[in-house]
Length: 326
Image 1: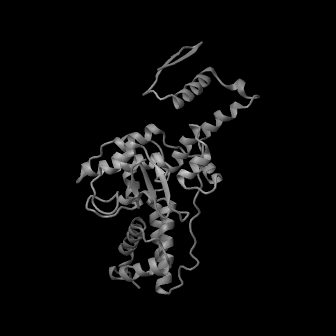
Image 2: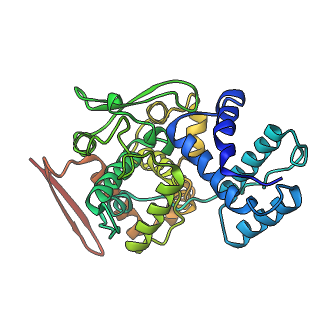
Image 3: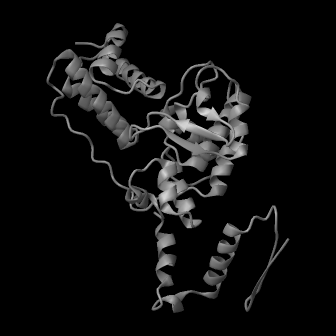
């Protein structure tokens, strides 16, 4: 059998009603995008396991992420159920490698990604404005990309400034306070429809579109790190932990019921751990003068608001003088 575009309306009902998939706009667009990609391939080829193997092999050769490929496998298994064919019942997923070391984004990385101006063919001003607000929101809340894409204007509130992430992964709504600057960036976006983040033509966005744009921005600023949407979540937890914020609070902000889940994200950099272990009394003698000065300066910078206090640091090979004045 061949796939054709007329299948989508009935398939849509099957996926979102019968199989109970999320019908949020971002999830809907992602599922429709995968169907269209499969349609391009199977409109001239029989929808069989052998041909699907070839399709997957081509995706792997093109370097697509394993998680992206696994989503196609999930969709095809559902298509098999819809057509009542059993070719894909036992089709297995690729094993996704867990990152033992994540090269997290720094606050400076996040700011550069948000502020770089990309030359789009159309709607350049709007898209750059929208992406800046989205990246800073991701970077300062640790929210999942789906939670951000599903924000409506009714979820944005002042007094204090906050957003409400609805029907999140754990099934609960989550209220997260945001800074006044982020609130203003969001509020100043053109109100193109129900959702805060929409396409220039008033359509919905999906996570793959955001990922492609992030990679484009990373290339533009010369950021040599593996970029994916969830990296903002890793980085947020790591940044907050390194700045001394209690993990119980961080877990509440990012929507983890169990702080042990939050711990898995924390301080994933081996370089960070290599310095942490030197705090042991038997290892302190390995801390160099340069490392000691850096630790002290980092601690001072984390706790002193330089907009309200004057901070003076004088450092040489023999001394470190720090002065804080009103």
